Length: 476
Image 1 (cartoon, rainbow, N blue to C red):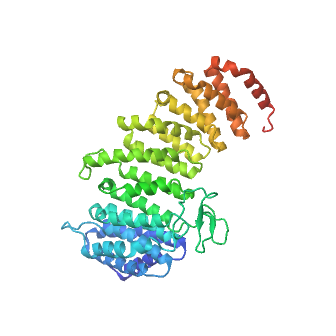
Image 2 (cartoon, rainbow, N blue to C red):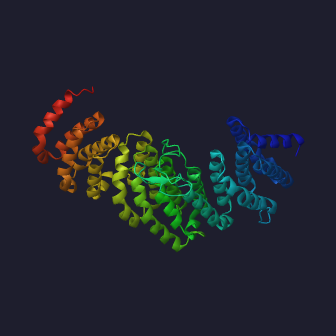
């Protein structure tokens, strides 16, 4: 290895801790796409001495960066460690992993630095611990499983401690901030969403490392694979249940990412393999009983980011359950109405993603699915037409109109018991204060008359009056 190559390597590694984001990103890309691939898979692939020397340089530089007072250096050390593991953590010709590398990775990085960096003052440093642990656990799942329990317990402890704003615990973060109070040191009671000076804090403020700890939990779950079911998951479930009710929407979002991680890591649960055991399958099915009702709640959350995260979780579930009749029979009734409505949700990302998921899961059988789950679909549409969020009411009107034009005109029998309630819901939306809701209700009412002409006779006069009034609506 020439002096020039050594200088280039050290320079790029040190640039991982540069104060400018652009320089850090550039150094990462050059190391990942040019320098390290050449060392491990290029012309020098057979040069063991060259590879060992490169690895030693990386270890020495990363060791120094981990101990730096600058957050950029610690951030760079984490990214450098990810590259070190990615390119060098592999068995040699004798079937062993180099002892110095293994010692540095598990005893120095995992045992010495990770616990401190999980609560680092800098958000970006804490956040990057997740990809590091995911890479490490995925590369060596046997050792990863040995460390998983300890990591899980550390994270859940931190999540529990940061779940409330006040340092001594108290009222749960899912409490109503207008009602719930907390006690200050002097005994004074103030609302949970105010600081000690009485200033109102935003819902997303003051949660310290809560969000990043949830994100790290997501990453280690993604790395462990089906071995996840070798561990006690009750505390993870409790953290998820609390997280999805948190007043901070970003914590709710990451809680659904954790659920998505559980389904992603369980993708091969029904496949026969060395890591899959019959008891894993049973634990997975049992876990679904707890997780699916939570997902259904997220699919109806008021915040688009939370809906999108829950939509990702539901797709990951169907990747596993699509061909499993038992799971489909058990959970379709709960998920189908929410998946269907989100195809018309106002947020473009949720809308597009939900349409793609619907096609992936149901293909050309959408009409049959809606007829099969007619009761659940109708009740959910009616409830959503009365939601506080005008965008949800608008989506409900779109869905009712679609139900009338594409499904009920072909087979109206499954929907007959709910016609009167649907009719009332549409009339209420036609008189809504929000003009987009009125507009959608106007078209949905027309579709309703076509699909259910006899039932519509009782309200036809009222509908005509509403239609004529709509022609002179202030909104053009």
